[in-house]
Image (cartoon, rainbow, N blue to C red):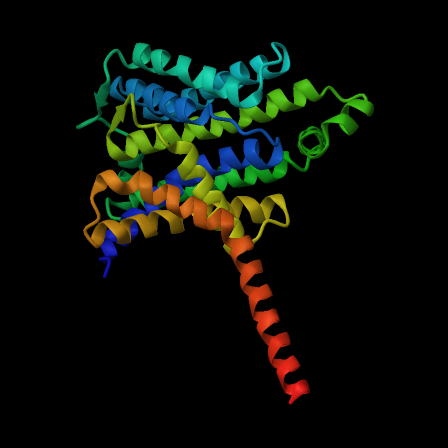
Length: 304
């Protein structure tokens, strides 16, 4: 059975990675682009945050991470819209380039933050150490949720949503679909970079390889949240994907408590995503099978 301490830690991580899920939700669901930039922009946010935090500017590190993360999204959008490169390939190219960029920013593969002041130590000075991480993550997530929901109710936000639904229709309505797609991807990667910045300060280090597999983690959070809580509106969706991230982290923590090796986490993540994606199909097959059995029994009774 998971301890209360481990449960709280899982919830804190879930909220931190919930920002990643919200960012990926924007690109994956709203803009309708399979954006693989995420692996690079997550590390980019962590790198910028760690370097500025080590220099004594933790809050500025978080804000700068969002700005530079949006530039990563802009690079991917530029390759897609202006250079006419396929979305998946554009994301891979940007992600690959960001590996070198992240190393340049950090100056070395790993930047430790032991002893440095972070946004969490600042919160701890107000509320104490016990709930400082939880409250800080919750506050940031609520701010981002509110900003995303309000933005996608504006005319520009509705245009971005329409671009993801039907790009041809948007173009016929004299809306610049390249611009709306670019803004959507910039926003998505800014929030992903924010997630990296928060996680780096929470874990007290940034590593050049910490972004590997973030797409899978984000998709797992999105699909778990949507399957359990639904996705009928933007508000419901951002809440669902954040709770999905928390549930995913609790599952991972429980698996680790059972003694599963740390190296198997990526395998577990892939299995969770596969099961979550195939859930509607499995339920449909199960219902059809039950219906057929019911029909067979009725047929047997009528013949008798």
